[in-house]
Image (cartoon, rainbow, N blue to C red; front, side, top):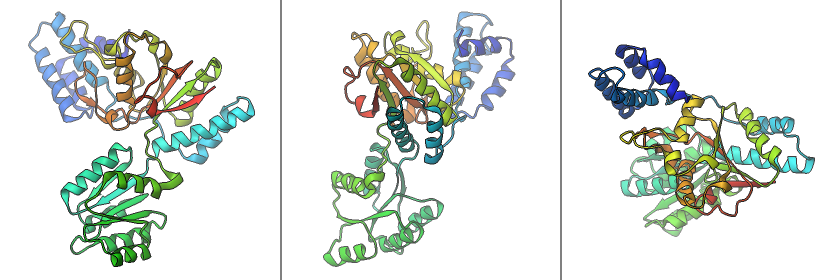
Length: 380
């Protein structure tokens, strides 16, 4: 019996008002809450025990079972993780050091994405830059003028600041000065449509990392940002671990070590049991046998939005439907798409971006892009 089935049994003996109170205290997004309340209103006029009543009750239970705002993990610190892995990874010494270093770097990269502040009083340019850098996996904050940018700098730090030069009362030079005063290590990239040698020299003398002329070329912006971040680049694109090879004890032990180090719960999913995309993405509630997919079901069981998912047997997925299964896996692992993942049964967005995925496979030969691009592969 699944976690949701158990909840349905509990709701069968509860009153409509009791379930309503559960819905209202679940801190759901407005769309999910409205769907649950609509279902509850329908239940109130149906015969208790009918098949339709049972179907709607299951849907309402599924919405309330999701941990919309509950997390159990921590934000890892490099020193603490290194110490933890030193104590708990007991493989052959040379291999253990390599694994510890790789795990620590990946986890820091995943949970501490580089932060970028984009400042421009031209709405189109601001939106374009924000979207392009977000798709690269960076954590992006936008400001539509210099004064707003300085307010953002007072709230928190940034690794890179990209600012227009001419913006009214508070210009790009003021943003540059505030950035350097508060965060000396941050890199500032100046952009403007009125570039001259003098303005470029002035910006560089004041501490700007680089100067880009408008109209902007997004490829130039991306490459300049990567150059500015240097060895500290942390786009979060490789957001899942893939343990590959025939060393079964090591592959199965490590996910639990990682979960313990992060203070997270573990959800085990056997990919050999996946027959089609419905098993992962869910089956529409209007269909007979409608049910959530294994990802949402696992989230409900963990009762936390940030568990460690161990996806075992990737190389054993049937070739007949591996393309659709790989496509769904790419969607749930991708750092941008996963923020608004829609299970076909739940049919409302749920944020999976805090989930940590670990894929276990004997071989990586069948893994193709774009899924492969999201994996940090550790071979045993």
